[in-house]
Length: 182
Image 1: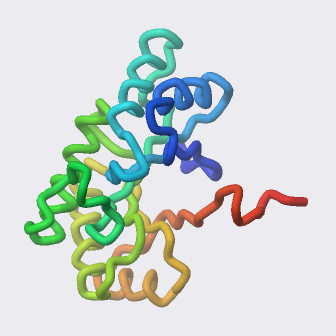
Image 2: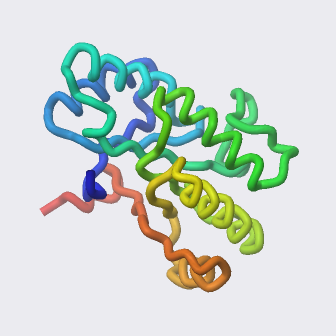
Image 3: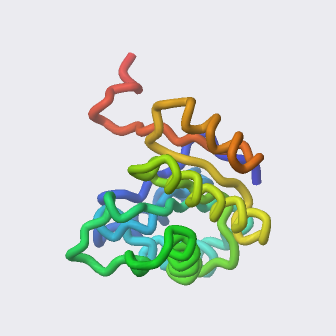
């Protein structure tokens, strides 16, 4: 499957996540965005939806684009279980978060993995990007990118430091920004 231009976002769906993801896919969406960020997303319920889609609607995993994001500690709610140990080095946090995502989503690979945003320090962002490059090289992740970044110099620095270009940039698009207003 090629990269989707519009992806069904699963943030803030809470207990309705499964039902809404199934409805979105049955009604034509073929790309789903989630994140390892229990504060706003429930990857386990997205995984439940993927299982229902296969069993009840014969929509196979390979017919869908599944994207998740690594969310650094600054974007997490520490009162909820974290998808990684915050004391671990950033590359280990990413590895652990991805393994949790794969388990929750009931899949063996991700079509896309994004950094949810640049980390607070550029060296940490570069270290995180190197971890994404390794996951792509291993075949666990097919494309890598970043969301919520508005400074092209960060994207250029990642390529300069690692030799790997950012392949997906996800811009924030929600009702409040009114980008769909005519």
